[in-house]
Length: 85
Image (tube, rainbow, N blue to C red):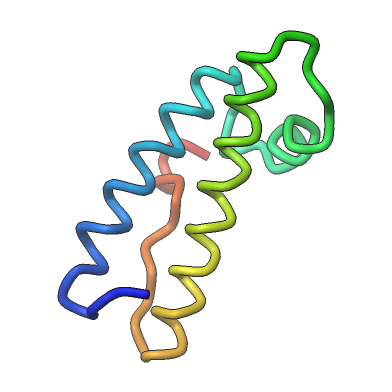
């Protein structure tokens, strides 16, 4: 997926997008049940549903990037800072 020299930059860019879509969807990323509910529920408006789908896709990408990093012996930083939880 990526070269090891770019993981920090890729994660930062991905996390910025995740935080942006979480704000659009009004989801607290530190609240796992809230995130899961957002991803499960269909929203009435097309724009809201599109944002929810984008958030879901970004979260899946982050999980895949984290898995790749762990496989190569890297420790991915958390999506949420410990002081925000």
